[in-house]
Amino acid sequence: MTTAPETPPAWIPDAETIARANVTTFAADHGIDGYPALHRWSVEHRAGFWEAVVDRLGVVLRRPPDTMLDVSGGVEQPRWLDGAELNIVESCFTAPRDDVAIVFRAGGELRRMTYGEVRDAVDRTAHGLVAAGFGAGDRIAIAMPMTVESVVAYLSIVALGGVVVSIADSFAAEEIATRLRITDAAAVVTQDRIHRAGRDLPMYEKVLEAGAPRCLVIDTGAGMTLREGDTWWHDLEIGDGGTFTAAAGEPHRHSNILFSSGTTGDPKAIPWSHLTPLKSAMDGHFHHDIQPGDVVAWPTNLGWMMGPWLIYASLVNGATMALHDDAPTGRDFGEFVADAAVTLLGVVPSLVAAWRTSACMEGLDWSRIRRFSSTGEASNADDMRYLMGLAGERPVIEYCGGTEIGGGYIAATMVQPARPAAFTTPTLGLDIRILDDDGKPADAGELFIVPPSIGLSVELLNRDHHEVYYDGVPETDVPLRRHGDHFERLDDGTYRAHGRVDDTMNLGGIKVGSAELERAMADVEGVAEVAAVAVEPPGGGPSRLVVYAVPAPGFVPDVAAWELAMQAAIRSELNPLFKIHDVVVADSLPRTASAKVMRRTLRDAYGAAP
Image 1: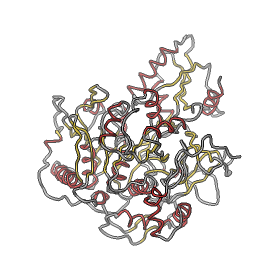
Image 2 (image 1 turned 60 degrees about the vertical axis):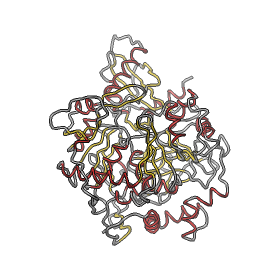
Image 3 (image 1 turned 135 degrees about the horizontal axis):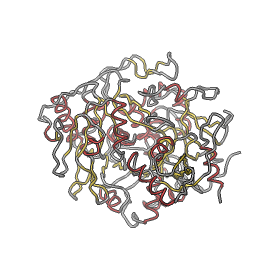
Image 4 (image 1 turned 45 degrees about the horizontal axis):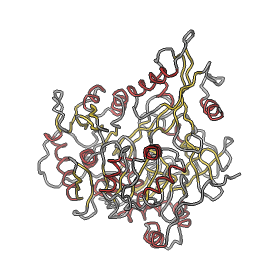
């Protein structure tokens, strides 16, 4: 039985919005009438759809493909653009050189860099990296905020044929070390310190604590002395070597390695190819309606897939990305959004909840915003309605996907009515199935993806890809791929997210496994056993971290002290962005016959508690 939507559409597109939308003009170009027919065509003719996307986006190919799609090896291992040669960086600079590529604030001033200036900086930096001994195939980590320097470093590494290893600047040294170990990175691009919410935080020191190899360090004026063998970024041999010819090659070679937490052990290391960014750019083009002249802001960094997504969705579409490298929680961020004339603002739902509580964004001129987008966590309808009101009732494009997708599998568009916290459509080129616990079609249950698509991962560096995404999935009329999200289809045909069905959770827009959190808290004094679960709050919205803890024999717990100690352990060993909502003392943890902790039982019990 379907569920009635709690709220009616809060925004309905007018005729002008529909007429100018990218999906409208694209459908018309291909003789397709309306969005539903366009989506149907995109999944029934996937090769034709992606061929049209490559043409529409102006993707630069050094050699055209022999075939657009080869599934002779099965849908788990498709060969897209087989025989083609490209470097995705070349597709980032097809806009006019005088158009603005990046807007940012430096020294209190709003500054802009054109496409020509960014391209020249990438050329100089790529020449400098080559002169410093780096080349095709080298894995170079970037561990720093989302700044102009990090964007230039990212594009330069990919241009020379290298592979970016994406590491979030908020991770603790131990987690940085894990990612460097998994990828065997040859170097790390970082900066001496981070200025965040009025405080200076060490970054270079943290990278050194992680046992980093050679570091290329951006100088923010902290007056540090570098370790022997490390290099200041400005001292690289970045002379005027002229245009750097990007290293082209087959499309499936690696360009980026990102990470996504699993249920146990190390985080999954997910390679992006030179094709994965096409998924990011396509989602930006059609589902977010990014066009030349748009200014796109999304508080993020390169350690989260939305960092690379922002680069490609903006630049391939000829738009401007707006970078603010301080915390987005205060009014200074809102003032930057206004001053930069942002037209698309991306958020995570917990950020909106914080804005609503503090009222820090009220009274700002956000009139240039044409739409918001929300991803990373399940949204709360009241919070999203509040967000819409901050810009004069502009829509929110709900967007859900993953690192292993290169973008989203379910979203919305600017040609469909928007209801707060609801998705309207699977993304173009993809289809979905919702199945119950018995593997039968249902209106609520686990959501599966129908492959293939450009963007979907085909390998993991440190896991069995088939086991993670395909092993044991229910048999249906089409092959399915596991993702692990719980969804509900409402009676108006829209969808609502309800978090994860497995033992991972999204906290502050970052995926983390229960096992990782439990491992960090295991040594807290007096804890015999601990289980971390994500609980959906009443009314929906971002998951809350609830910790169940069993005291050691004879130990009388002080719950408040336990929570402080557990939070400190998570902060030092994982990430300070992961916040504990509640600690529950338990006599024991429920287990299966094979001794596995039944976290789902704990989630259900907490949700049912008065």
